[in-house]
Amino acid sequence: NVQEFPNLDWAALPSHPLPVVVVVVVAAAWIGPAGKMMLSRLKPAVAGGPPPGDKRKKKGKRIPQLEELLTQRDFTGAIALLEFKRHVGEQEEDTDLWIGYCAFHLGDYKRALEEYEALTKQPGCNPDVWVNLACTYFFLGMYSQAEQAALKAPKSRLQNRLLFHLAHKFGDEKKLMNFHQNLQDITEDQLSLASIHYMRSHYQEAIDIYKRILLDNREYLALNVYVALCYYKLDYYDVSQEVLAVYLQQVPDSTIALNLKACNHFRLYNGKAAEAELKNLMDSASTSFEFAKELIKHNLVVFRGGEGALQVLPSLIDVIPEVRLNLVIYYLRQDDAQEAYNLIKDLEPTTPQEYILKGVVNAVLGQEMGSRDHLKIAQQFFQLVGGSASECDTIPGRQCMASCFFLLRQFDDVLIYLNSVKSYFYNDDTFNFNYAQAKAATGNTSEAEEVFLLIQSDKIKNDFVYISWLARCYIMNKKPQQAWELYQKMETSGESFSLLQLIANDCYKMGQFYYSAKAFDVLERLDPNPEYWEGKRGACVGIFQMILAGREPKDTLREVLHLLRSTGNAQVEYIVRIMKKWAKENRVPI
Image (cartoon, rainbow, N blue to C red; front, top):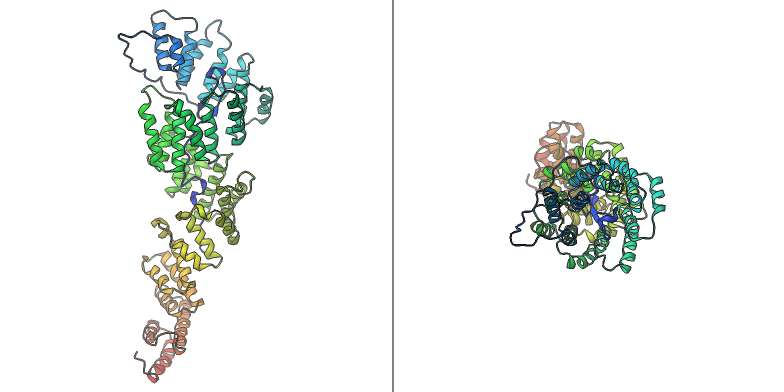
């Protein structure tokens, strides 16, 4: 009756942590028609200085104009030019606005914040500055301040889009619908709507909007990145890669596109291939380039299989949404279920991955603590995901239903779902472990034994659940000697004692009395319980009966007598006398 929760890797998660593919948001028209990427930050960013400027050798070269630098998207150069003009007294009226704009596009939102806040304190401040300040607050994760600043700005389409996104962040469905109704059939508003679809996991709806805009605006190449992001989220990694290539041909050094390419490589190939892509990105980035550095640090941890997780991830919790989930996975892999639970217990799940991971953590903790409450919560989470219309036909959805039925001990139903996805997990040790348990629990011990023996993981093979189930399969498949060898490889412990009990009782039930007698003999020596003597006595008599029937070698009788004599019970002499008499009559040396 020993069971184990199925597959800790079913969170998509534990065997496949979540690299971050930056969330799409087009909140501001002044960011550009193709939009901008952002980190879905929850934790406000309140500290940090501006990035160091690039060292630029100007000798013998014409000083470029601001318009040229902006056209080339050389925002570092633009800031250097604007600051130089400010320093020598050639500052124009809108210099501060342009510095804020360039800092924003460079990903240095704190610097942009300083510029815009200073502008709002000047007399006669242009009221449109408030909406730019609000966008900057938004990108820093300071949503309350963003809302306050946005409401001070005059009504505009940009203000409506920003408040639309803030309503999503605050989870205010009523306001969300109100601002949704104000959206118009113009590019910026439709891009903003698509990004909300993306963040609410409505990826196909987002793709439909992006493709419709691309039909009329082929020059909006960045939309291909957004479409590729959606396909990535739908697990169509090869399609995502094809769409992404269109953009990378024109913009080969795009941070977001190269990061997504690395994430696709992680899913299609392995962590090393993904890391190689990120290395190209880091090598090509300038020293002043700050945008997405946190994201790249996080993804490197994922691509390296969790290496450096405790050094990198804790500081990024609530900065990048996937960080909390991946740190939970890290703790699960370190067998620290309590720490994993502490990290996820207050998370209100909104995505399938979050529901699955909460289910996994509760299941693991429930088994460790013997808590029915945690196991019930886990079962409900799995059922919720597996029964949902969007997930029921996905691989994780079917794994969830298998997990749900596993916890309910309905193993015939478990096999229905596991069989439907078996072809995807032929060499997956965790899947095979659970599949074999379900097979054995339904009485198909022959196939269960085959699947157990496919497992290569030493961690699983040393798990008592694995050992006890395999021993039971051996016994049921008439291979008691191999079950006994499993016991002999174990050190003396509570688990080895439990395995002896299993061998003794299961072998007795199956008429394999020789190994039953050996197991009861060891049990009796370890614990002088009368029941163990009774079991040994019955097994020894059973062996004698099989010898008489010609189904057991006669020389086995010598060991039977040895086993009996090791017990100081009054019944021993009577049984031994009968066996010796038969041996003498049949000339069996004892």
